[in-house]
Length: 270
Image (cartoon, rainbow, N blue to C red):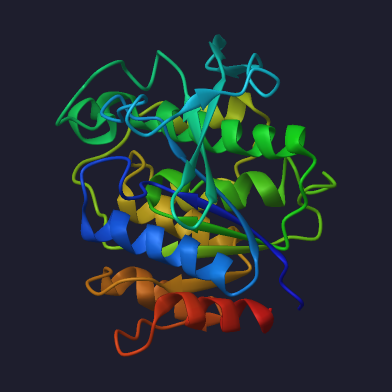
């Protein structure tokens, strides 16, 4: 396929939160794809640790204002944007006071207030999709990186499968070395069913009757993605094998070659 537009949805992007190998890699990939000639728009959560003044974030009023209902509660969607220099990469931030707090230097909500991570993930994914719809921007490839993005393929292949912004998109899920311990809220599946998802669509999350964990989140992403990338060293072997067994296009990790070029070439084959 001729890839001209890439929607890059990431758990974190350096330098907006304290640098990590994960965040730095995401920045390099997004910038590298743009340098290869693709039009790239990036999305990440607006963590409270992000300094809005230093990073020159500003709210996009015309995109904000939508309420996202989760578990029968309304959560206002706030959209902010910044331009990453010197690449001029546009980065959009999904914000909401219920899930992303104010002024939390040194703390990241997904790690330090993990009890809301099920709803935080749902809100981030739906907020990103609804914002792209408002932008009337049609992505050739949607690349999702990090467990907080793992529900994106599910939503795009079901709820939004006929939406003009996504009906022709190829969904690529990138396996990362970002495992968390424990499980998400035991009512997560119930909350997703309130949005109309069926038992069959949620099978990867309900396989053994236990609460959703990191493995299950990644498996439902793999089940609904069009292709999978092993994006880092140290990805759990169980997930790599599950991805390979799916029979879908799979790009293994290779530290010897630059990720942006490899990813861009991989996209062309989809």
